Each structure stands twice: as structure tokens, then as C-alpha cells.
View 1 (tube, rainbow, N blue to C red):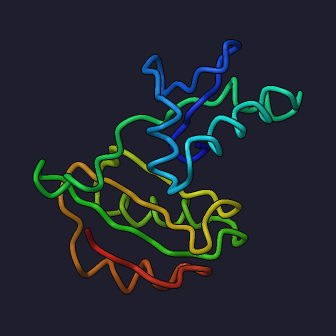
View 2: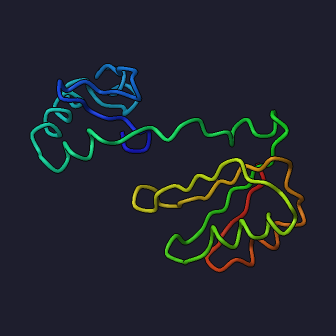
Amino acid sequence: MIELGLRIDEEGRILCGDVEIKEVSLARAAGVDRRVAVSTVASILSDRTLHKLFSGIQPAGALLKGIAKDLGFGAVELEANAKKPSIIARATALLADRKISIRQIYAKDPELFENPTLSIITERPIPGSLIPKFMEIPGVKKVSML
């Protein structure tokens, strides 16, 4: 629910933006029985901290990484140690040095994902010669051109 930005309103409805998501749909996606989804919503509504969190969360918007190539954009994904500082700054500096504009940056939360990644979508394709440069950034474990 957090990854997708699903929120729960005062009536206990599950929403993605303004689109209502039925408990059965959420349960099917999570691979659980509908009753589990219903009880999860009830638990969230009964807990002040969880209710505040899940009533204010929002979807992040359309991520272009899966269609970047089709749109003529560039895309690179860095798997990195999120505890290392300056990964985003150094990666964007490499692109800026080559005058490549950035359209989107999306970082997976290291608390939610075992192997967090940083996806960068650019205005034009990224030259392969940057792969070794991205690998030189402290904390970067893997680089994938998408």
C-alpha cells in the first residue's frame, strides 16, 4: 500500500488518488484472502499513528522508466547502498557534465526494499561510456541501462 501510495479515507475506503480500490482487488494483488484486507483496513483505522500515515499518503505519479526507450528518453538504474551520501548528487553531476537533462528521478525506499534502486530518466539516451563512471560512485553496486 505504501509503495503504490494507497490511502485510507475516514470511511475506510482504499483510494489511489481519487480512484477507489476494492478490498477484494487489494487482497488479490497481495495474494491474501479478502478478509485479511478488510481487517488490515480496520487495524489501520483504529491506530492513530497508522491512520495518520495512511490517510495522508499519495501516489508518486507515472514512472516513465518502463517506456523511456519508446519515448526516445534515456534511463539508468543504480542499485546502491542507500546509507552512502551523495549518490544522487554524483550521478546527476555525471549527466550534467554531458549536458543531459533529467526528466525524472525515482529512488526506492531502503526501509521497504531489500535492494533499493535509483532510477534516472533523461531527456535523451545515456551513453554507455557512463556505466564505469556510475560504478565509481561510492556505494553503487550495480548499473543497468534500461
